[in-house]
Image (cartoon, rainbow, N blue to C red; front, side):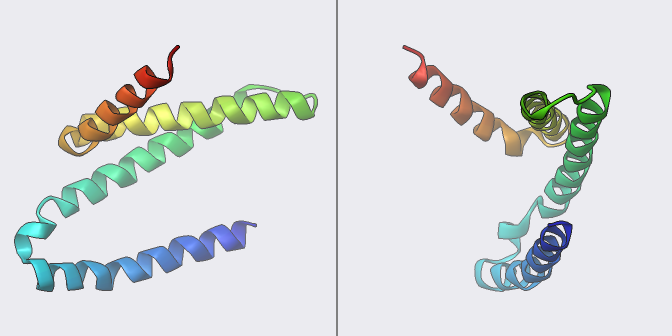
Length: 111
């Protein structure tokens, strides 16, 4: 399973380079403004999210399947929150629209 994840990551990264080059050629340099900052912010946010998920997973001892499922959900939630916090801190202009949309969707689902 890890090999599949690694292969997917490498494949997406390799395909991204020609896509960025084509976008720049077709749409002009303005279309790529802020790409470097957003890339570095997302790398840092991904590392923070991974660290938060691992920390939660290692902090709670597992005693069964149901506990493991609960810990997995908690670790995923911690990873998402850590990612969002770091991404918002490093690049608020890019993540603010996503947070606004998520808040709207959450408000719609409430009875």
